[in-house]
Amino acid sequence: MPKAKADIRTTLGQSAPDYWKDALNDLSEKDPVMCELIQAYPGSFLRSRGAPYETLMRSIVGQQISVAAANTIWTRLEAQLGKPVTPQAALAKGESLREAGLSARKTAYLLNLSQWFAENKDLDLSFSAMTDDEVIQCLVARPGIGPWTAEMFLMFCLRRPDVFALADLGLLKAIERLYNKDRSQAKLLSETWRPYRTVASWFLWRSLDPIPVEY
Image 1: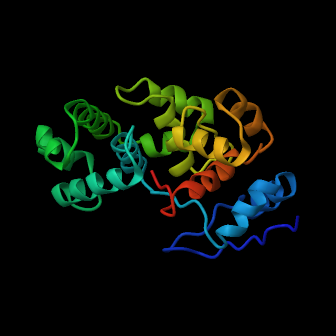
Image 2: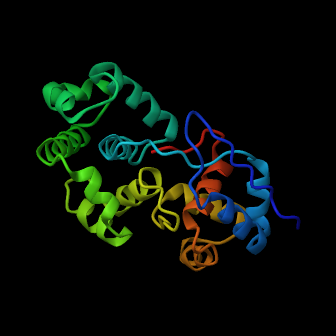
């Protein structure tokens, strides 16, 4: 199968991660299914949501709901809090964050996260200096942040290249549909995509939803 063209044009002021071109070439050579996915979405790439605080907020909002539903709730939160969303604005709103369509539990998680960032001004730099495992260990110690949310943070904020969220239902669905493999086989399949499992995951999500996943 021909190698996919690694088109990495800038999008909305962002460039592709510096590993993106190599990842497209590597995955295309290794995996015919992945090659077809890459060819189906030329010029597209994983974009960062930017600030760690906002990325984690969006990840908590997106837990166990569809991309479309998460986007709707986030738009309502931005209407409440302004852009960019800040810890101080969220803390000032308190429980009224629920008006955006959040559950009581998610509201509590968001407020706890906001308090953490408000009290620790250097978190952004700290994350950048950590390994993937260190970031996960740090984040899962917070209420409402489990391994999945920490993995989304690694992918969509820090844009680390080799993350695979085995518990993600979307990834498992795409793997079953495209590779005819179940959850017990998904981890072994993902090993073939190293060291670019983040990139493979991003294209698997794209195979399910035309809206790019951006937690």
